[in-house]
Length: 554
Image (cartoon, rainbow, N blue to C red; front, side):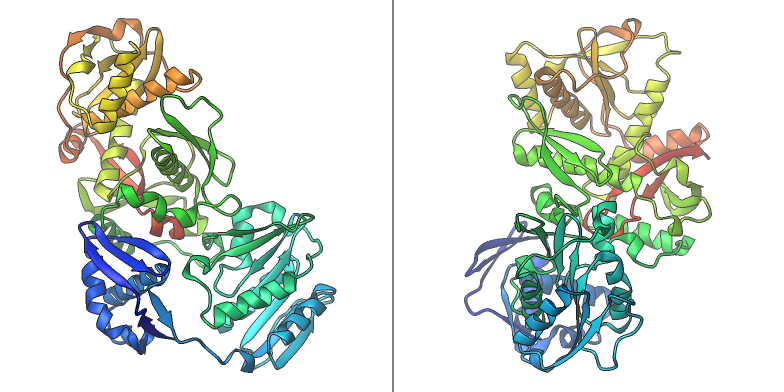
């Protein structure tokens, strides 16, 4: 389809990206370079070129960038495309089992399709499709859909699926991920049979028609429709392709180091647009993250509960619902990445890692040290270097906590009223001061020079916090103190022994440095290694800076 910028679109560069005003309203595209890309592309978005013609002959990197910019403009509904009017001339195959098969045949015929081949799958699954097939419809259960899905994928034939389970009927238009992806995302309950509701076949054909003729609004493209059994309630759902539904193999050392270079050169993520960025990951049925309100008071700070597909939940906190959702999403995505391992991508029982102070050096580490819900060194960041710093701080904190039993010298206590904090930390301190609930904070910073602190409220140890930036660690501790104050079941850590609670010292340790900490660790015969948590490549493309830090012998 030939691309044309709509006549009523107004573009306005901004410091953090581009504002796009269309008939649907004001949209925002983040990125420092996006305005320049759109400015250079606009003269060619006049209806003369398809996306393939626009990118013909471009280097792979530039082609990927142009396609990404065009997709962003589509999402804002800033582009219009010449619609495909050849739908009726397509050679269609309608496959499935009765009574749904007959309903689907009638709906396909009513849509204008003239060349329809009917395949009854009640006795055998599809092993091949007739030559010249341009479009396939299917109605039936999940297991019978899979071989048809593979046959269509091999020949790049658009496929529209109506899959009936015991709980719901799912409509998957041609642009949506396949049933193999959806069933893996939703879990084992997806394979039961059932009866399709009235009108489901017509809805599927209409969705396919709109997709193939370019009539689907950008916001609806690629979404699955779920029709609940009994109530016939319809909901739309986002579904990412599942890694186990795609081919995979171990990376070579060179491929891994290329991935590390890409991470180091990647753009810094904008916190303001973070929730919009991860929106494809969030869905109540098919997402890798599902949000729910935390079952706790939300007077001082907002809390959000984020649940992973395996049922594991984390709690995020912040001033305002957006901040709480952002914190919960970061924690949930990190936990998901740590529990998602594709055995096909392992090198034996190992996985590639790079030395954090020498990123051109890679070595294999046991996958058992990387994947799993427990352990230290799990981190997310705004950039790869930021994530490395947080991961190393987590490992450093684990070493400090492990050494508490053998330590005799007390840790100094710092004056929270005299330390520099970021905006959220200052707000937390102000609230706690007014409530006369400022915690006792002890500086645990060790020989690596990474600021670390213990927060205590009387006999209770609320938690231990570390970061290269002391203001970040102190702010996180203050926020956790507020959470503990409004809901005491949160914020109960291994107690800091009374003998280690020392006298006052006014200021905390200075900021840490990643290179210095890594060098000191190496001087002690140890090395910090980082593993990208990217076995779910669709999630990693959205949130690339997920890592597990491992400390091993140098």
